[in-house]
Amino acid sequence: MNSLVLPLTAIVLFAFAYRYYGAFLAHRVARLDPRRATPAVTRADGRDFVRTDRFVLFGHHFAAISASGPLIGPVLAAQFGYLPGAIWILLGAALGGAVHDFIILFASVRHGAAPLSEIARREIGSVAHGASTAAILFITILLLAGLGIVVVNALAHSPWGTFTVAMTIPAALLFGLYMYRIRPGRVVEGSLIGVALILAAVLLGPWVVHSGAAAWFTLSPKTLAIILPLYAFIAATLPVWLLLCPRDYLSTYMKIGTIVLLVIGVAIVHPKIQMPAVTSFIDGSGPVLPGMKVFPFCFIVIACGAISGFHALIGSGTTPRMVPDEPSIRFIGYGAMLTEGLVAIMALVAATTLAPADYFLINGVPRVVHALGIQPLQLTELTRMVGEETLQGRTGGAVSLAVGMANILRQIPGLGGWMAYWYHFAIMFEAVFILTALDTGTRVARYLFQDVAGRVWAPLGSTTNVWSVGLVGALVCLCWGYLAATGTVETIWPLFGVANQLLAVIALAVGTTFLLRQRPPAYALTTFLPLCFLTVTTMTAGVLNTFRYLSPAYIADKGPAVSYLDGVLSIVLLFLVATVLLDSVRRWAHILAERRRGVTEIALALPDSLTTPEPAPPGA
Image 1 (tube, rainbow, N blue to C red):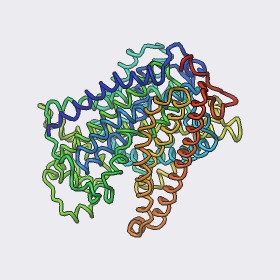
Image 2 (cartoon, helix red, strand yellow):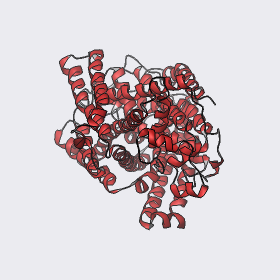
Image 3 (cartoon, one colour):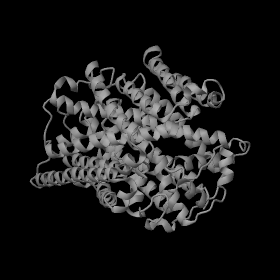
Image 4 (cartoon, helix red, strand yellow):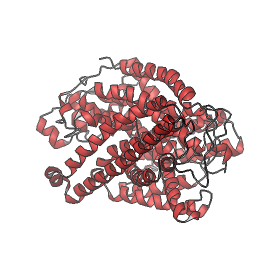
């Protein structure tokens, strides 16, 4: 099949979804009110609550939610063929992921920028609050540790990537100062300066590699594992307008620009998709995801490319504190997820244009590949062209994505000799993609921990007190930094995908309750139907994973410590999410009973005694 079919389908479908379904959500389901002040206005503090230009905030939000999922997930899911992943990305992003992101951002704004766990407390009750808080805190640290390990692996011994990523920091600081202090509100001027600095850093990368400065940016995994939490601590404690938001905004230019370039490359080259629509490995016999069948694991592996619980942390974390007005929620929440869906489609295209044998040799577990007798086709030539010693057994998806992207871009007329350049650029691009989620995720984790700590000792909950912000921020970075430094992909990653989707189950349950309380029951189907599908797939995957972790074969392969740890944590996660679901059903039954009695305004389950959200607008 011509590879141009998938991107064109995605662009048309997502444009249609934004225009019509997004408008339905905004005007009929949520009833966004342009006259209603957002928390960025009513609680402005110059640090966390900052009214931000909608385009700048879109850049921050997109950069924050776009981690490894939309890049790596579709590449790994290509083991099943291009069709299962493509269908799930197209439908899942438009009808599930974008709805999830929109509703959670809207609910958080209406609840005064409250985090997801607090919204669960107010909308569902104390049991759901306790279970969701425990699940969210654990999942957040697990996700950050997993992202940290990916960034470490991507930047280790890579001076080009490390240099470019490092240069985004001073560029962001300058952009932030320019936008908010030197020339307030001049977004275009600041953007031109910031983007020029980012492009200069990219172009200078090859020069740095061959200069005396290369040693400064050639860092070992151990060194990076120390530097990353320190950077995240700074990003999580500085005022949001100074570093975090500007850096994410500028990084978005690189992210979207690279994807647009890849779309143009596919349009010019239109390489053939070589992977079959459906492979024989849908039964779980494949070398990339051994033991994982197309159902339910295709829906788990792709993660952020279609729907992601991590987005709920951003949508109820940093973003609602900067939303300038309610109508912007559709553009930021729904629009950013559709953009991420396009990223996922392009990652799938890049992977599936490689020869299947080469794809499996790069991504497959070596012993499984060897047992299947897979032989390379173009891999030797590709290895020489990218300048690597070997590409075989480079599991995880990042390397095959970089090879696939580079192989497409080098076929553009006049760029034939740039294969090595495009390969290393793609590796750096992936690291930037993930790092922007890491720093924002750390800030969100700080909010979550402060929310819990503040109930134990009030001063720790203050987001304006420098000492409490610093102390809790340091604790968060220490937790995930320790796991990233001492853990491995084998100890962290097995739970990553399921944990992420379980978080989405919690978010959709909260969103359904939020809508059911304020709007006619039919409107709550927009979140309830995705919730049903995701609950079935994720709970099934969680149970299957638990049995796999505790199986004799897995214990013999990974060792008892890792196996039992993964198994116990998986059971705990499933129990916590099941608790939230059951408490949600109880709350739904109460709300529907009240509706049958003729009650039109259903009270919150547990109104906050300190910051009760404003009442719904008339007619809502």
